Length: 104
Image: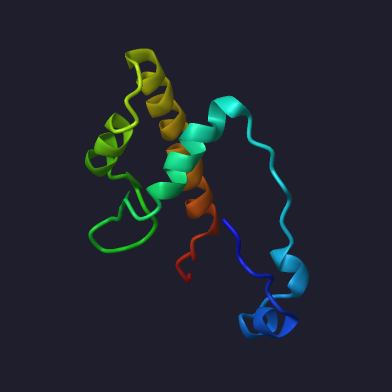
């Protein structure tokens, strides 16, 4: 997915410096390409707590049909499910880490 570079003016308007937007290129092993592609597709399918806040997990009922459409054998389907669960947990931990903290 291509996104145009952020300009210095755009970064400052958001309260950041240009170097805050520098990212590393990450190589994806072939075994992880399908889980990563599917995880990126389900970006809007997070379960949010009733009073808002950081997501508490993926909405699996919406994801299973997408997984089924891939036509994978049982073992490959289970491997994909396990990979998505690992990504889900890591994403939740990261979102919680960067979520705004309540004022004391």
